[in-house]
Image 1 (cartoon, helix red, strand yellow):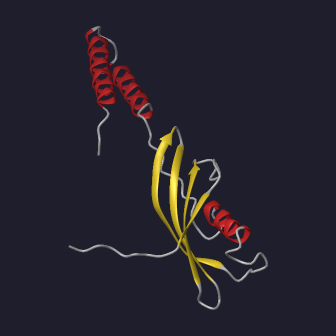
Image 2: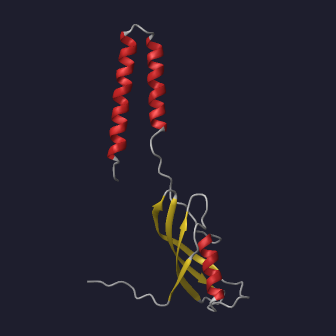
Image 3: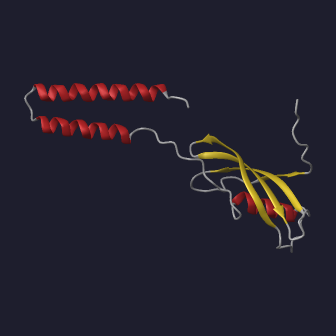
Length: 153
């Protein structure tokens, strides 16, 4: 986990400011209740102002954007007959999701399709997605022709 130093410094500066204002308020003989209320209000404002990291969007699932576009590409390129409706994704795994902009992520999925006869086609997809829209870009589809396994030493 990385720490944003400028945000940490801003928080520490804000806390120092709150303490200074509170003690000046109390020294002036003002009501301590109002001083405490001001302290709570400023502290709450600081907490709400902290940056929030949104979670990467989940665009997987059997009816997800990447799955639908991969199936369309397989049919359009003759790897599946266009009239076949018995093919469905049996496994959808998000391999990566990298933030590439403000609320914009590049996602890579591994999708395995299977028909009723047990034949499978495995593809990798890559597309951009946001928390608002999974279809921020087209979907690049790569057909996995052979899994070579891993190398052990």
